[in-house]
Each structure stands twice: as C-alpha cells, then as structure tokens.
Image 1 (cartoon, helix red, strand yellow):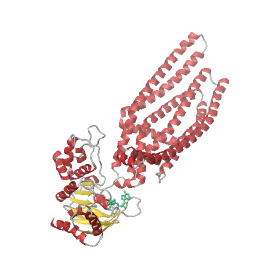
Image 2: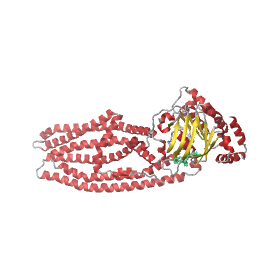
Image 3: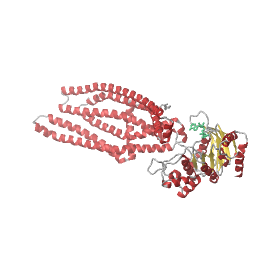
Image 4: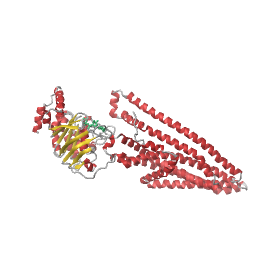
Length: 630
Ligand SMILES: Nc1ncnc2c1ncn2[C@@H]1O[C@H](COP(=O)(O)OP(=O)(O)OP(=O)(O)O)[C@@H](O)[C@H]1O
C-alpha cells in the first residue's frame, strides 16, 4: 500500500534546493515570514525587526570594543595606565554584551508569542479554503495529497518566525563582523567567504536530501495517520476486537514505519557524508585563513591589537556564515512546505468552486436533461442519459441495485456535483449558475452516513442555524421524525452534548442518531428534501411514522426518496428505477409492480422473501390499492 504523488511537481521543487536558488529565494521567504507576522501582530513583528537590527549594531560595537581593549592592553606604558586606557572599551563591551543578551530574550519572547499564532492562522485559512472546494475534489487522489501537504505547511508555519529571526540575526552578525574585518584588512573577508563555501554547499545538499526523503515518505506518513485513526477511534474498536484484527493492523503499521525508517536512515547517512566532506574542505580552507592572519602579523602588515580583533571578528563572521547557511537551508525547506500551503489557498487544490451568483427561490421544478456524470478518474459513467422532472409537492423515489447511481443522482439534483454533460436546472437555471450556498440553503439532506456532530442536540438539529421559531420549530421537527422520544430521555434535553467523551455528554444508539439526522432535515426550511435510506436504522414504528408523515412534508417541498425497502416507495408519486446509471423504468408503484421489468423482479424477490418470514408484508395488490387510494 502506497500513496503516490503522480504530478511529481513537489519533487521537482525539492530538487531545486541549491545554493544559488537559496540565495535567490531567501529574501522572498524572509519577506513572507515578516508579512504573515505583520498581519497577525504587527507590533510583535516590528519589535522583532528592531531587536535584530539593534542586536547587529551591538555586535559591531562589541567587536570595536574588543579591538579598543586589546589595543589599549598591548600599548606601551605601565599596567595601571593600560588598564585605565582599556576601561572605556571594557565598559562598552560589557554594555553591548548585556544589551545583546536582553535583546535575545526579547526576541525569544516575541517569537514564542507569534509562532503558534501563525500556525493557527494558517490552519484557519486552510480550513476556509477546504470548505470552498467542489465536492468532486474529494474523489481525486491528487487533491487529498495536496491538502495533506498544505496541512503540513500550516503546521510548520510557526517555524518560519524562528527561522526568519535566526536568519536576520545571522545576517546582522555577518554585516557587523564583515564591516570590522574589512576595516582590519580587505583580504580577510573574501578569504573567509571562500572558506565557508564548501560547508555551505554541503549543508544545503544535506537539507535537500532530507526534504526529498520526507517528501517521498509523505504518502507513508498519510497511511500511518489513517491507520492510527482507524485503530485508535472508538467507532471500530469493537470490530477490531471481535475480528481479532489488532495484530494485522499493528503489523501493517510496523511495516510502513520500517519503510519510513529505512528512508530516514538513508537520508541521514547521505546527509552526514555530505557534511563530513564539507567540514573537511572547510577545515582546510579555514586553516588557510588563519595562516593568512599569522602571515599578516609576521610581516608587520597588521598590528597585534588588530590581529586580536581579527580573531574575534573571524569567529563572529564564521558563525554568522554557518548560521546563514544552516538557517537558510532550514527556511528553504519550510518555505517549500509553505509553498504547498499558499498554492493550496490560491487554487484550493485545483478545485475552487467557480459558480454563478444567482440566488434561487425554493424550486418549483427541478429538470434533469440528458444527464451524464463520471467521477474523477473513473473508467465508466456513474449516470448516463438521465432525464426527468421533479416538481414541488411531489415525492419521487429512486430504486435500483447497489451502485446503480441513486446517491449520485441525488447529489446532482442538489448541486453538490455538477453534470459532466447534460443539465440539471432549478426553475430553468443550471445548478452551476446558482450561488452554491444560497442553493444549499434550499436543500435538506439525510445521507446514508450522516454526521454525528459532537455538539448539543439543539445544534445537531439546527446545524448552528436556528430558525425564527426557535425551540418551537425544533420540537415540531422532533415530533415529525420521532426524535421527541430521544430528546425527552436526554439528561439536559436539547442542551445535552451528543458525545459521551464530553463532560455531561450522552451517546445515542444508531437509530436514535438517525432520528436526529431526520430532524435536521425536517427542521430546515428548504425546498428540496433528499432522503437516502432514511429509515435503515429505525424500528418498524419509527419507520411507519416517517412514511406516514412524508406526504405532509412534501406539500411545500420536492422530495426525493432513495430506499431498498420497496414497500416504502408506495408513498411516492413516481418511482424511477435505475440500472447501471440509466433510468430503465418509471411509473407509479402500482404500475411498476404489475409490469414486467426490473422493479417487479426486485419486488417479487423481496416480497417472496418477506412473506416467508414469520411476519407477513403487505401484498402488492394491497399496497397498490392503498397507493391508488392515497
Ligand atoms: N466518490 C466516488 N468516486 C468514484 N466512483 C464512485 C464514487 N461514489 C460512487 N462511485 C461509483 O458510482 C456508481 C454509483 O454509485 P452510487 O453511490 O450513486 O450508487 P447507489 O445506487 O446509491 O448505491 P447504493 O444502493 O449502494 O447506495 C458506483 O459504480 C460507484 O462505484
């Protein structure tokens, strides 16, 4: 099992972590870090910049103070006189060091305040972007991969602050040290830069190797998180035990972990080899720099005082260069993850909803014409040549084998998916031309797998959108769905949190949850009601209550009912029979049950089976008479 990034675009980006690309990208990354920080807390961002600039100036001052101290101490005269002469420089040195320490603490304080906020902000923007994509995005493997990468970008956005700060600090040190060094002797700085070059190349190469290794293991990390969720979550805990699956699942987890560990080890070994070669080359080059200082001193081209300062300045610049390269490589890596995040925000993973802005009324008529729909990357159409009309006040039932396209059709009627070809129109307007959110406010959906929100019963029913009637509307919807019995049993009524994990919360049974899901739909003032297997978990009494009340609900709505229990479709005005994505029959229940065709086949099988059960189901004749009469 492995997830694969088929585009390979991120691998290409990762391969671009080279010294020259780094030099080009660093200013842009620091700008991005500052810009994001600025949006979140401009005073903290400003404070950080000022602290780093002042810290750099203090470093230069410190180096000058070192130079002054050494020059005074090595001058001629008695020791008291020399100490007296060195005193002002010593005070300056102590002051600069203390100021830098204070500034360092301030920077750490501001960074730790700002960093987590940046990640939270990045996560929120990502969440918003995710809710703005077409539902079809979730069917495309590439989208989930990009979302995953963007998630990681949001998570490590906080590193951008500390890495950006380290980089600015190194740069400030470099400028300070380089200024002093150039003043001492112009040849020293280029020599030192030359000495730092091999290490820089090695560090950047090692960072590239680590990023690429992480990138190639991304799919495995995703598998691990999915497995962790399935193994750890309560929903499957009973099945893991009863199915004795623990060894299998943990074994699969270990297998994937081993694969990641192998890749990590390979990357660590290669990175270490690169660093070693870099350090060796750098060591030789550094020896040359120190030899140059000794030569300058020996030939009288540099005073002893200046040579002493050069030692400090060389160390400062050397450390600053290393900081720049190591920090630069790190921020490059973070930058690539942040690219994944910002690209996702820009393009919503390639699936941003681009639809019209027309605001629909509750639909009088939904017309489907020559509809074809194919899922992303699917080989066959899920729906082909489907045409029919649904009117307000009508109940239309969809029946057919598993996989015949019923749920897909319901999602197209509600504009959750858009047609591949053909059209679905609401009062003559194609669903793609409607404002999607305005359209969905007219849709009440009870899907097969309804969400069990860890919210109060009230919020679970209103979905956070209470109507003007308030609790009275909620109670009316509860009465229609049978959830009134559920709510009365709850410890704090509608205020009870429907999750046992939470203090004061309560868990519901499968059927009780389905009643809540039905209440949501009945409570919503929507023009289109979609019920996909709405009574699969209900007891016979509960089921009877739903179907007995359905006609009343349909008075002000268009209703689509999907069910495998064919006795229930007697309530519908029309039944559409789907097979392999096509409508193969349509008519009333009583028409279809008497005509040869798929519906009668299904009915006969189900009815015969049911009549062999101890309790007898209604005969087709009885039901059809009932339907005709209704
Ligand atoms: N997200 C998806 N991506 C790709 N193919 C899908 C997706 N969802 C459904 N399909 C395919 O589309 C076809 C129609 O599926 P659909 O869920 O609409 O069937 P259904 O009639 O509602 O089935 P059931 O009675 O089992 O609920 C099936 O072949 C299914 O495999």
